[in-house]
Image (cartoon, rainbow, N blue to C red; front, side, top):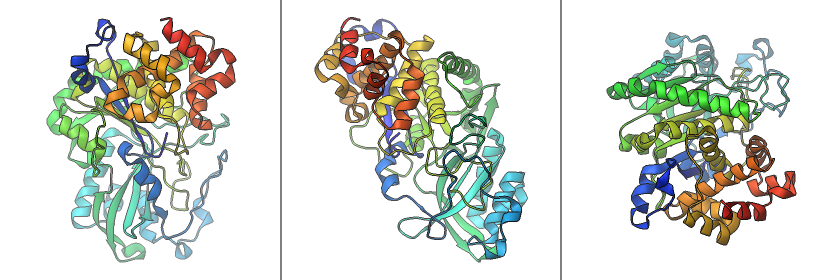
Length: 459
């Protein structure tokens, strides 16, 4: 997961469509088949921006992060004296309100437009369901005020205690940054404006309609509620399939379901995908995206049950009209991303996108949602480029995306069919910050890039 780098994939129907690609239809086909995974820290297209303009804790200085592997609460209520804290009392009270689900207390610290926007935020996320949350003030690189605010949407994700993972027993929340202005101080502090910094979440744009099943929460803006009703059972089936697949691969899956939005408007999808930033030139269109989010930095105001630090937080999924060609496959692709992000939260700015998109594409193959076909263009690209066929540059751009995603998925399939462990490959590539070809070859010489090329050529 690179610093908020969007990874773009070409999710393709199984069958003869891919057997003999027609060059004259390539652009239309790509536009229909693309699936996007905005992989790290909220906004796929804002990777370098996030890396260069990481917000500093409020006030300036380092907050105490929970050490890796330490599941001891960072604080308990008796451990601090709010009168001597660097945080205004309002921030303690707002965090307590989130933990206690006290809407009145929470909104009492906002005025005017900010109160209306925070009320919309509260009501929408309450409809999605959550157990705990946080709000943490920060200072942006330009000196302006920010808050990182989030909750554990739908299905709280966390590693089980005793697993040895850094986040064992801690909850992954979905946080986003908002620009704010305030007046007053102490318990007289009031938030007077509250607008998205870069990411625009669907729940920022109006009242949402929500339906839920045992393993999925699906939502849309109110004017598209019929789409939720029509799609919820398909989303549930895809969620069950993805969870069962991960378990069958031997994965330790620290979540029981997924939170997803859906829209029939490509304009809405692009707004939520890019937020306040411009779409990069040449980047492919999307059928949907999975977005991992910001954690809070550890401090005395944060619920100690929440995972903190600079690794990625919880994930949400959004599907657009481009998914209509095979919504089940797109759901499985994006839900596989969500499991991957939860199983291997990243602190790296340089994880190969192929590790992420290859796993999601492999999930399509392994679940039967799609069939791997070594069509002539793919064979030629793998033979001539080797692992460079799924470089980040080729994955992001329309010209190379289709072969890049199919090639990355094929490497996981090659590993699975030749005695390797695709789950370990997915997790280790992220946690070790190494390309999938290196991780696979290190586990067995039989899984080298050269042997993968021969395997593709023989399909």
